[in-house]
Length: 274
Image 1 (cartoon, rainbow, N blue to C red):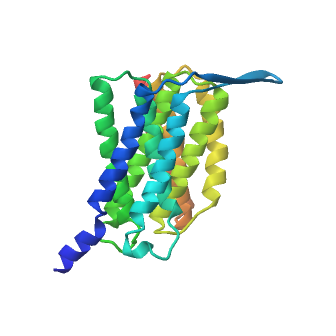
Image 2: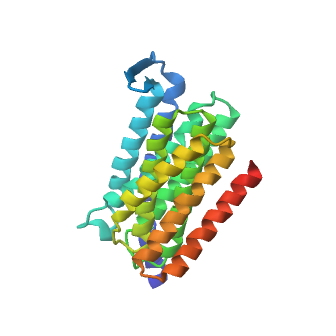
Image 3: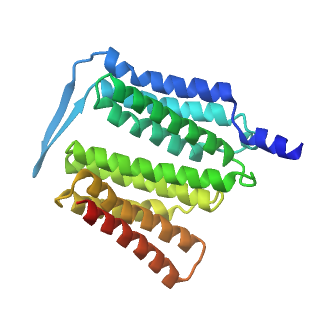
């Protein structure tokens, strides 16, 4: 009976998670049904020209991110452990998921691949929401599995984002803030999961500065989109691993060895793919 009770407690309300996922995925169909004239916001700064396009995809991106945040809060507030505690940290990965899975959908016309993308994106979103529900309680029997799953999905989303932005040939002034902010949020959330609810705030500053440098360098290297993603996955994951070990007060030699091995592995893969 205790096992059954714990299992039920670990699972979110299926009706709520279905409604939330369906609402977010339905919002993506707006890109194919609504036509809004695109507007260009441009300005000339000393040394370079900035141009940003505002279109229906921009509005849908904001909409699905807001839906993910509000919907996650609505879903998780049902958990017994979430009654009297802040849960804003649980918004990060669902919001990132809703935003990133929409980017490749915007590049495809309605068809087989678009619907396959919707199906895959919806499945990932449901996994993220279910995992976030589980990790509300650090003592949950499935906490470790859910935490590993969230970390894997978060870094996979970072890789996908890097590949897509490279393939779209996004300019430096847009790709640097997009990837550095994403890395900082993923690292912050990953460390929060590994430390079972504790925060390691220096992670944001460290990741932002270092990843901005790596992204700027990678932008000018002759790398294919996949190689570009792998090249940046190295420092992103190595930094997170190093900061996690630092928070757990491990030996410096062990921390550097692990981070270095991760970096070499991803860079070797990037070179091989390239």
